[in-house]
Image 1 (cartoon, rainbow, N blue to C red):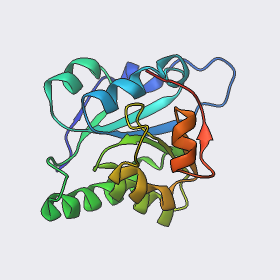
Image 2 (cartoon, one colour):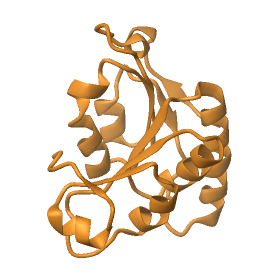
Image 3 (cartoon, rainbow, N blue to C red):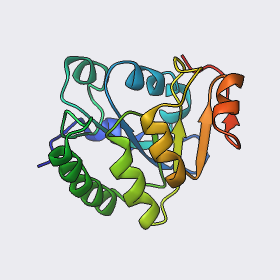
Image 4 (cartoon, rainbow, N blue to C red):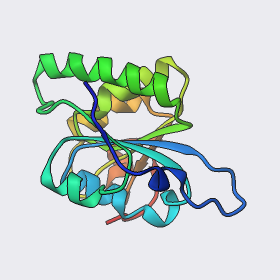
Length: 169
């Protein structure tokens, strides 16, 4: 079962004449979440929902935000992969976001697969600390990504056709 926390005020955002989007951020905690937080100057103007794990850093950083708790651990845990796949269908059906964004890790895959099936655009931002090899989640999510972004020129070589956006964190 998904648990939501957050206030109605945080869900409303502060539109400034631009079209407000509904963003669905799907991310592990720790550095993955920290990278998405660095984009706050952009996302704060949009309606948003976060999917992450019930961890102290997520509770602290996302206080007042709409949060759906995913099942953890995700790596090599087939039961939680199935649970998160059901959660993805439920969340995407309920909120119908305009775009799904993620920096990984494992929780991203079921959401990207389900979003692709529903024709919801997806944006994957590869993590900044892997410049010499691909990440498992990046490799798995790439075929389901509408846009695949990297932070280092070396990552463009690992992911041909990706978009270099520069350092986020």
